[in-house]
Length: 373
Image 1 (cartoon, rainbow, N blue to C red):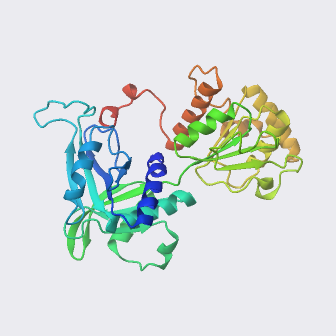
Image 2: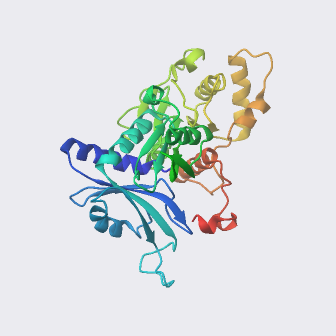
């Protein structure tokens, strides 16, 4: 998954600079050779007063990029090659990775439409794809796919078609395409929708889970039937807080739960059997349930919950085993957790693994990890 925390840091600074009419430089990783801490799509915003937000490396390149970015972009966007190891193989102090990173550096004129599109995608939690020209006289020219106004744009432009292709395929790519009769190198960057986490249960152990999810840039909703627990004072970082209508039978629209996005996750950690039954019934009755549903507690307890769910939904049979296969129960990875903080870590780790569709193995055991560490 693309890192969401960059945008949470970049967008406030960008809004401030735009409001002041100030110029800025946006640096974006567009290609990597060898090992690199950050991947294509990582961004850093530079303000004229020296402030910066976001990162394009693990600390190896930021200062160097900031020193040179302003004069490098005096005449327009450009792609610069940066090495985190000297050409003779000697590693400079703080280099860390030893790979080569290619950065697109651009000023406000071309960066503003990009940041405006990223803001719209981030706030609305919708996927976005951007096709960017990386060479020639049109360097920095872009087309987008996934925004509402895309429907109003003319079809047939090769740059926009590549963006639509990346959006439909759900992955980034680099291609040579014909633009105005010239074969041109273009990078299409796919950004998945910002994931959301529904934390069902507002007890004390939900607080570190909310904090960790917010550190990852996720949209976090805290929901509980107990109004004295589901409060802004207890969860100041949550994007939304809901008091659940537990007394009502689950029905259409998840009995007031609200709309879930395709990449959302639900963690059921209320410690209340009756409440968990109602929540599970609401989620499992949905036409499009969250991509991840995790339930705290032993599998035996979850099976008992599902038997009650079937009764609540008045089903003729109890599909407990079928439902169990859809759930992550017990919730979390086996990390030896024994405190609210470490349990929250196991939950966040399993959700990240599930949404990113990765193995969860140690990187030393994953083939090809050396080139992506």
